[in-house]
Image (cartoon, rainbow, N blue to C red):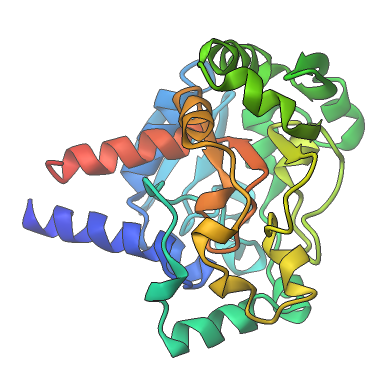
Length: 292
């Protein structure tokens, strides 16, 4: 039990501190990660097993190998070095304060935030996401999008998140501060076929599984680390209280309905909410295993 608790604490630390994606992936518990996927998507994920020296899972009937956190089809499992890791990590309760960063960590973030470093990251294998979310190209994915109205804005989103977003909106409007918060918003976006800026990796917006909500006026407070980086080399040191952020109640409402918040990331994106119920399930499973 002590060993499991130590592993869980280390995994959480890796989310909070500026370490590489590869280092994070090495700390993930494969069995718990796959069980979290099954919990989040029980209609698509099944058959978790340890096969041929690795964990495997079936997604929409197709077999995938864990492959160090890359989730590869059998034909590519021995070419893992050609693919990037899927993002799989524990979700912190609150963002980490920049005041805790060491000089070494700050320099590491500065390096990882350069255009060159970001472009060097390998893209993930598309087969797993295609099996989980449906569609392997733009035309197929666009066919899965549905037009919705969310907080007064029209957008397209993946059919999987229509009901979760409806619940989010109902809860925000029922909250006593909901109307005042909605009145501060200037725009909101869902589906957008594009890569993550300065990378080879497709954005979750490309699946219609992410929503951005922006204020009419941020009052000069940073919203997205990259926008801040372009004018401030110390973008990572902006105190949490000086960044724009939705109210904690709104963040909690999204979380209850399967969305993670980009404001918890070291590379912060406080307007961004992403449908990742498997990460929330993984966090619960790790904490439960560690006896928390």
